[in-house]
Length: 387
Ligand code: GLA
Image (cartoon, rainbow, N blue to C red; front, side):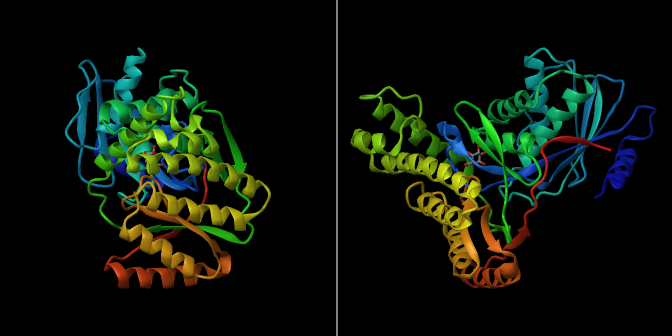
């Protein structure tokens, strides 16, 4: 749906008015490397995609926020003079959670009509929920002149997801959606929140995303279990060294202290986090040095660690990665996002992209019975207002 169609749909839903319709956009993201490190105070390296969530907004001169989406048939209203309540598993919880966070900071909106339209593939793990939160936060901040900066809005959106929606995610997805820049990846230190935009110089290569199209059944509970295992590993280490999170340790320190983690599974979880931080720093350095071979190799190692130590891959992601690596011209391939389904990201030579999509798609179907979708990623800007 283009922006003209979005406006037309808006008017067909909410009618004509003298108030202006304003349009906003926030992207989804793909993470290149640095997985399951954000909530451990580590490094991530995501970039914003050109697909994401569009939002058309208009003030309605009532004490009411009305929500609709062009993606499916579900609407909802929220009274602005009453407490915001969570509504089951509705998508409206994401934007209402954002309004709730603004309210905690004594920032109240006036009545608005909102129409969302997303072009991120559904449930693909490319952060459609973060893009809904960020587009809402960004739009309300602009329209009502709340005066928050982007990083405030990123944190506010993460809080909405943690506290209102009830998903205990880290900061990476909201950060990438809010702070992205075309043709750049974002190097974020999730402990200090210092970040840098690194030019994505991929001479002759493309970023190819492959969607397993596997339903991510118990992903949330397994995600929380991984978080708990990391916290427990931190507790164990604290018997000898006072750390705040796993990323306070480098590999050498970890190797010297890892015997304190008596649970073998927890030890492997912790090892993933610490080795992933090292790989992420190495990959960023390799990119800066135009050494895409090394970048790809570190992506491969990242996947293997997520498969063996962190155990968040599964048959579908592993199959896509195995088949991707068989294609000459693939420099690296790994799962991206939380795992348990969702997508892989691969760096593939321009000339081989077609073969990649055909061959990996065919083998994946033969081995799993599922049909993968492929997207050649374009790296776009973070949250913005559009004309
Ligand atoms: C999900 C979460 C992120 C991050 C990744 C794993 O996408 O929302 O905060 O933890 O998983 O790297």
